[in-house]
Amino acid sequence: MTPEHTRLTEALRELRTRTELSLAALAERTAYSKSSWERYLNGKAMPPRKAIQDLCRTAREPDGRLLALWEIAEAQWSGRAAGLNPAPSPALPAPTGPRPETRPPARPETRPETRRRSPGPERARSRNGRLVMVLASLYAMLTGGVTLALLLLPDQHAAQGEPMPPPSPYVLAPRCHQASCEGQDPIRMVCGITPDTLATYRTTTGAHIELRYNDKCGAAWARTWGTQIGDRTDITANGPTHEASTTDSVDAETYTYTQMTAARPGSIIRSCFHPATAGREQECFDTRVDTTGKSRSPSALSRSAPDAA
Image 1 (tube, rainbow, N blue to C red):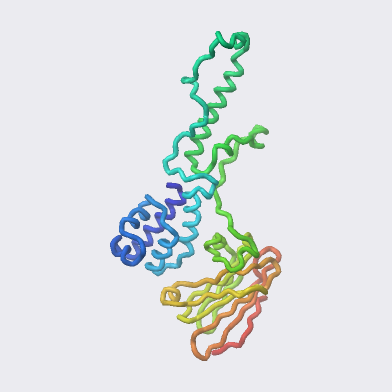
Image 2 (image 1 turned 30 degrees about the horizontal axis):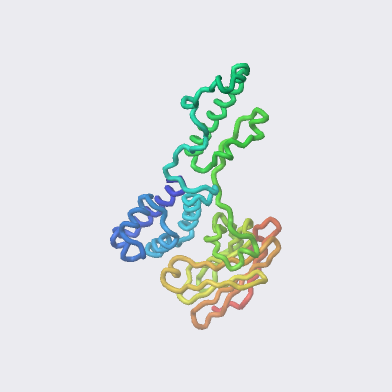
């Protein structure tokens, strides 16, 4: 298992423990069998995205954190992270050439000129080349995330006689940017990892609205909690409006979030809360993304629509 898969498996075990459900009971409440959950919870198989959502819903837990862990672990498992096929039990690559001890000796009777050559430097280069290939392959298997070709590329630090820096951990990049993020799920597009919180509001009904923004994605979305069934929240940045609804008790006890709207520094983002309670009117809030991609201070934010106390 990769370190990412291990972290995901530990989080799944912890969540399943909190449900106090047996594997059989968990299978009854989800679309996956007892044997499937045994494999997922022991790290023998990568659970599908739907299984993560089902477990979170059963445990009445927001699925944002686990889905973010799943995105990274699944990318490593499937090979999308480094453009490689998954290799849970890797073996030494074959095309490294024959090993020195099995290489057939030169045939002087057919190539007499080899006797007159100085074999020292040529043989040393051949042996060194094969040694580098084998060591690089072993290192790639131990790190689990670096390809052989990358390890053999020359490095400017090595050329200058400086020590090689340690390999950087893999970071899953966002899958969209600005216009291509419009209407997309922030978790699925990997925009929900370390976003900025532009502002947080409390409505007159006690619900909280949090405006979130990811500068790498160039998009914003609204997250709401403390709502009641039937409440709706929408968001727009002078473009399409995207809405999230509280449809059941799980949504009301956890949180909901809208799809993303494209935004950039200088964009004004508006979010409106539409309460289901009779006699309550909608409440709308504005914020502007400043030139650094962060929000303006809360005191500079404007609030529209009348209070309906």
